[in-house]
Image (tube, one colour):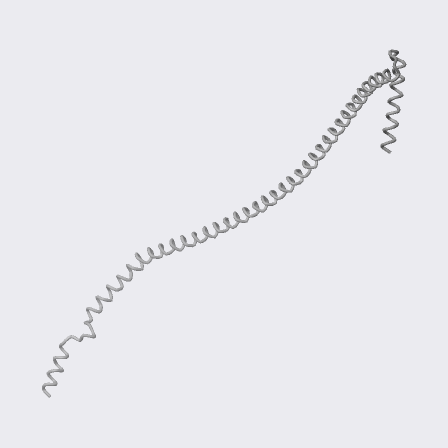
Length: 184
């Protein structure tokens, strides 16, 4: 027992590891309060200010991003409207070009037809003139040949112009009646 008593007395004198001394508790408590006061007065306002600035920057960035997105959407809509207008205008220009092309083509055909008709009319006039000239030339040559032939057949000279003209006219009339009779 003495042993137990001696252990108990020694235990009362030895520091208890779970309970610190009262002075240490008071000093720790004062240091904690001072540290808490410094943190609340000096550190927390700096953190609050940084937090507010960062929040404002993020919200401002979000607002700017939304504005930029709205502007981009408006620009896209305007671009699409302009593109649609340009496509419509291009279609209209193509249609006008087709119409103008068709009218130009019709006008060119009409001009070509008029030119062809004019050339045909000129050719017919020229052919008719050459035909008349050829007939007149043939009449003269046939007349000369007919009078020479008549002189040989009759045996006398047909120098009289009136007589010669009558013989030629009669001969040509006979030829024309024979050629029209053969054509029918």
